[in-house]
Every structure is written in structure tokens, then in C-alpha cells.
Amino acid sequence: MALTKEQKAEFDENLTEFKNYIEELKKDVNLYKTQMKKSKATEPYYQIAIVLNSIKLMNTCVSISDLSWHMLNLKSELYLNIARKEIYSIISAMEKVVGADFENGLDENRELLDMIPEFNPDQRINFIRGFRKTINDIVDAFGTNSKWKWSWPELHFKLAVLAKNLFDFRAYEKENDLDSPYYYTRKDHYSLIIELSNYAAQEYRSKYDLSTNDIADLKKCIALLEMNRKIFQMTGNTEDLQKTKTLIDSMASKINSLEGDKNRAKKKKK
Image (cartoon, rainbow, N blue to C red; front, side, top):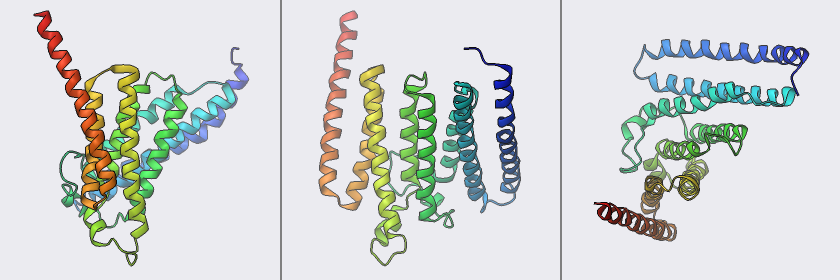
């Protein structure tokens, strides 16, 4: 059914307040960018402030799409795509703050973590939880048949790596007792990293099985499991360590078999 002028006018009227809020967020970001240039020491904190603004922007975009669905029975693809693109901006910004490494040791980003001591463990885990919820809200808003469906595993991969890089493994080992004010917070953050990594690995496995049949997707699974393996090894979690090693070996064997089949097929063509 075609939309009436009255429906469009009512929606536009409701949209005004959201647009005004978005403009205020943009002004704040411009201010943070100006202040960020003044001091190297405070730069990471302003980067985090910009990221938090971006999450507010994404949540607003999802709310606009919800409003559009409620009033017009239409998703707002325009605002959902703004939110989707903003996810990558956040990840890029946070990689400047804590790094993007997932292949080396767990303390490779020590110098970066030492620059954000005021970003405490409670704030870090709340940020990851909030960011994950926003990503999931955007994914849900696009729906199960979205053309972006198979791009979501990459986002979950990057979120897991970000959660790992925000975590201070040295402090976790040194202050792993009930007297530490962040004992339970760090336990929760530790568990969250494992959960996010396992979920992202499953997403990549589904992508391989249901869409691409691309060995690169299986290699991403291994990269995530390998990240968990290092964590279990460091913390002495022998049971999960052995399970993870078994999964890695099984998937590596599958990859070797698939690559062998491809090489044999190439030789036959020659």
C-alpha cells in the first residue's frame, strides 16, 4: 500500500528530533578531534570518546529504522547503512588505541595499554558489552536475508580481537585474587573473550558451509581458536586447552585435505 502524505509528514516530524541529536553528536566529535591534537598523552582518551559517540550514533540510527518500521512499515536502509559503516569506523579507531594484533603473544600491545590506565577494567568490559549489543541490534535490524549477511562474521572476528586487546593479561595474572577490586570484572572479561572468539569461529564455519566453501574462512576459525589456545595456555586451563587443540588439529587436517584436493585438481588440468 502506498504511503500517504500524512504518514510521511508525521514520520518526518518525528525524525527531526533524531536528526538534531545526530548533529549534536557530530559537533562533539569535532570538538574531541580538535582537543586530541593538543596532547599525545590524552589522544587515546579522546579517541575512546569519539568511539562512544559513534555508538550513540549507531543506536540512534537503529531507533530511526525502528520508528520507520513502526510508522511506515519500512526499514530505513539509509540509516541502517550509516550504522553499519560506523561499526568499521569504531573498530579502526580502537585499533589505534589498543592495536589489531591477534597472532602474536598476549602482551604484544603493552605500550598501548600503558597509555590508557584511566580506562579501567569496568569501563572496558562495559564498552565491549555495549558495542556487541549495538552490533547485534544492527544485524537484527537488517534481518536474516540481508545482502550483508556474510560480512557479519568479520565484524564478530574483529570484536573478539578487540575484546582480547583491551584485556590486561599481565594484571589478570598478578592480581588474580579476591583482594583485587577488579577480580570479578576481569574474570567476566576473560570469559567474554572466549565466548566472542568461539562465536566468531562458529560464524566463519557457517559461512564456509552455507556460502563460500572458501578455505580462508576455515583459516579464520583456526586463528580465533589459536587465540583462545594461547589464553588457556597462559592461564593453565588444561581441560579447555586440550579441547581447543583438538579442534585446531581437526580443522587444520580438513584444510590440508582440501588444499591437497585443489592442488591435485590443478595438476590434472595441466
